[in-house]
Length: 514
Image (tube, rainbow, N blue to C red; front, side, top):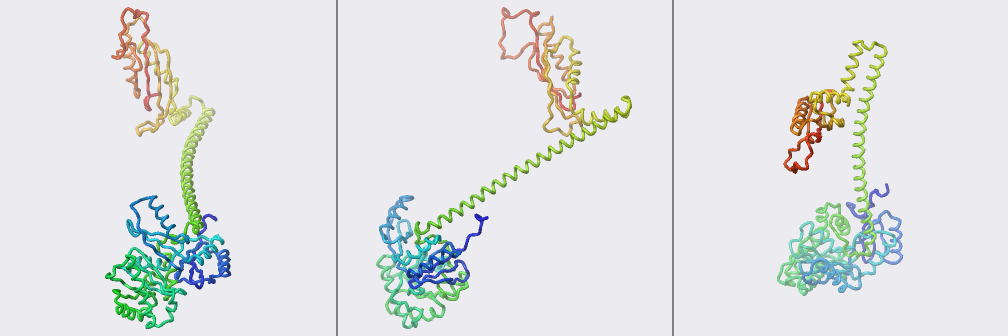
């Protein structure tokens, strides 16, 4: 099904001042599948590549772009007011670029940052959006490397990270345990790899001193505080350069301790198959970090928001479909159970019909008085027909009982039969029906109320003596209930004119006779 297809893999666009490289994100060893020049013709080729390539979602990694940082404070507001205030501070601080973000450093501290060199980034973003590709985020090397070191718990305190960027120069990133605070690129020194360590060490020392003075002026660093300067490059390179840089910093009076961080060790810690390549390291670390959209605004991420909405709708549809399937399965099982019960009852009725037909055929062929036929009829009655009591048999039994009390006459009689919901274990075979009888009558005159009550009591006692019979008295000739008002003798009729009526309800349970 189309809506259940596996999503395509994400891509990574590496943007440097000299080239635009595109590759698949998430591979153990990243490499650029295509490279384009950052001119109009190269960007047109990039748009055509993205339009016909299966990669439909990209993250952009900017190397060497102008990244500006500003520190600000927040008043004690919360919720929507706080978010609105942060958005306004961003708009006021960086009006000329949409690539901006804010990060809280504490309850009242705010770090605002933006990519101010927007022209090359605008061209790449417009090419991707024109091709219908989603942009998941725009990131910088400084923020990405800070996240990697924080994830590996390599930041014990204030750290100034020095790393070479391809085609860009030397990047200096000021890192704290909670993340990136400041970054800059030494634009005048693009010969980081070609220069020998003795020539490069004083240049790096000047860059470190300049950065530390700026941070001290922004009150982000105490002059007497200890700082760690970390060199990130190939193992042989940082081993040669670290002692020379430490000597130059000591000569200038900077309280900094230089450390070496080989790319090979960092790649091994991230379980990547890298060989000293910084872009490959950052590309491999991207899927392992919980990154947000970074510098990508709402307009740049609009296709990615649509993609996420479609994915949520697919999962919601799958959940609704699963619930519907489970409900249908439950209904189907109930229907199967009911059908099985119906088939069992029909099988019993067919068996009873078959046995009845056999007895009928046997009676036709034999004499009615034949003992074999009589036993067959008795067996059929006991097995099937006896389970259904007859009204005639019930009326005959009642007539026999009522005849024992000659002064009582029956006026009305209602008879009903019901099958017990759950027959008990002590219920006899073939008697699984309960009879309900409602009768009403009167005591014949000349009998006063006391005599009529005695005769009705005698009838009730006679009925209760029957096996399986329960008697409920509905009304008596003489109402002895305390809540009934007593009438005076002036308005009471004579005893000969009063009809002493009564009403009873009889319940005959299984095993209580015919």
